[in-house]
Image 1 (cartoon, rainbow over the protein chains, first blue to last red):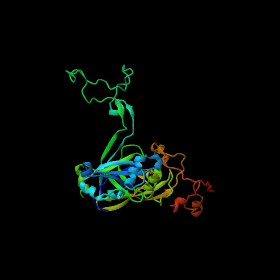
Image 2: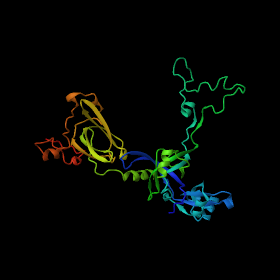
Image 3: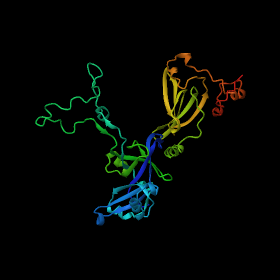
Image 4: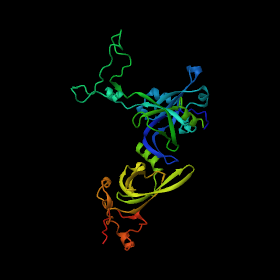
Length: 229
Length: 148
């Protein structure tokens, strides 16, 4: 496998467990079933204005797909797939790929850190104590029916002239069920037979949720030292 | 599907030579300690007062008395830092967690030896029942053979 392969994959969160490393240290890991993914579309700057690859993941019965999607996959010479996600690429990396090509966890061979995006678990319409960690009000001392309320949102000084609270005041609202990116996640191990990747720590979303794996965009100093050898 | 994949990940790391451990057993835990480049083995001797978790996450809590002060250590059983575990004696206990031993002082700390299910040991060594049982994992669990 050439090193120019992009470290981009679509995967499914399997669950969490732990592994012991060579020092005997216990590392919490999230297991992802990453791939096999297939190149279902290549976008090039001369035809589409930018370079990107669309990866297809997870077989689906044709009757559960749609005719346009089946035709789209057939164009790339692959069987119908459930998930299609686009990843931006360097022109050089795009040159190395061809339509219908299979990408496996081998693509992560030389990668130490990745960014992983997914949809977080939905928490519904959450109050400020759950959503922002406010302390709420007292339990006693005359507090009535306001134990979990946020208190004052602004005073006269902050809204002078407008009569409104400041922008960005933290209030109750929808929490979760949003796209979250976990940055600079360490790859602990790769299981090539089962197409599994072990990532240190927690990742967004429930088990069986779809996760997008990309090379880490930026690293803190200590991690950058490890990544560059 | 996913549970079997997780099991596949864990299975490779599970130790297969684990002795049959019970709460109340007095054990020698051989711990690998890395000091700089050198590695040595330290033995922690004590009573198992609790077991927790399952599979790769299984741990035991071992309690011993050092300089009249109780010391408890939690060992992940499948950690490579645990070199080996020897069972010295089986204590007679009626609890899954022996936290009551923390309150005990003096002779009350001691656990009665288990008499049930150890028939083969008594027959093998009738005169020295406190000798080290060579194959503690061979103790027929759930087979109430009364030692006469």
